[in-house]
Image 1 (tube, rainbow over the protein chains, first blue to last red):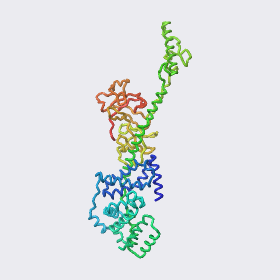
Image 2 (image 1 turned 120 degrees about the vertical axis):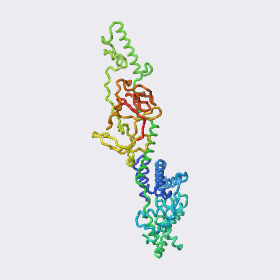
Image 3 (image 1 turned 90 degrees about the vertical axis):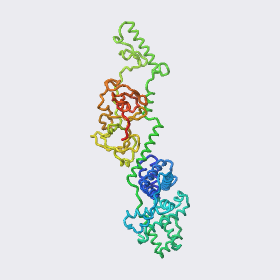
Image 4 (image 1 turned 180 degrees about the vertical axis):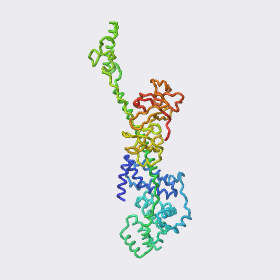
Length: 183
Length: 336
């Protein structure tokens, strides 16, 4: 984690100085996390892609002002969260509601393959409360410590801990991971 | 579920995230797991859950992002160029300050001196012609140079003309132009290679700056909306911007009739136009107006200027056709 942070800081410095290769390396390192958060937020692939692009455009425009005040991943999560919320508030994108039938089928599906497992995980994600889901994403996708996630989310670190735990318990139950003997 | 299970699993979740947990709580959680199969399963599930793949960003999305970002970078570069005077303009200013000014007797000592001596020389020639009734060309005449008086050829007595004719300058080398669908482009910013993964718009023929035979190179859609293209060259993936001039509030792009297949080749008129025989464009073109910078434009017979116009060679150093020894033809800018 610390190594990644150092790498990020170096890439941010170089990208802010105009090194497009460094910026591309940042994008490649973190695009999946941004995209996954947006996908889980909207439940729609196209909206996720639009949001991901908008996030990186905002990041690029703000690189010089970033100045390594915080860890890059913390800042990136903040930008990602704000972009998704802004798109939702402006009415440009709406979150796709979860179909309860999809959730019902999760536990009965064969999730042996990664592909099937991925689909089920994303469906299960949509069953989480938005607060639990974004806390989980901040920690699991962006690798934020609870304290930093709490700063972005505006809640104490203890609340982040509770939300992440609640998300994990719900996910393991929905995906029936414990029924498979704990993998 | 017992309260101990909830506490234990919360602790396990925090440990999984490498959060600080007191030794006492960690020990308690371990001890509980030794006796509780459900919590041991939960601990294993944490690993299984984090091992599940997340939805990955499609590879083409990375390319789209880099194209969008490259567009911003190009905009910024353009803005900074607008703040700092263009090099060509600065060069033009330098040229102007270095050129002799005909400020006769008004502080430019060199030309004031030359002027005074020139007037004196002309007066002397007139005296010789009038006084002797013979043309100056028939006589040895007096010219001035550096304040001294000497015998010189007649053409040297005009005052400003140098005693020795200046050598004809070698034709300037054309910029690093590319031609795509007969339209001329000049190198812009370097881009990330990811940009080249975007949509191809066709091919062009070029050897770039090399001496080898030209090859077909793909041209890609530019992230900009200024009509530029993206080309992968020997020095990387680069924007190539259209060579344009403004006319009647619209951009017109330089069109080449010849094969501009390597750097340094000057674009020529499209082959449907005969090269004018005279500086006024005759018989191919007639003077018809001026572009946004006051450069005279010439119309071809039967072609409205809105569809295209010609510009004579000899434009200023800041003109997009500067140094081109040929007449040039300009048509409305199109998006590739």
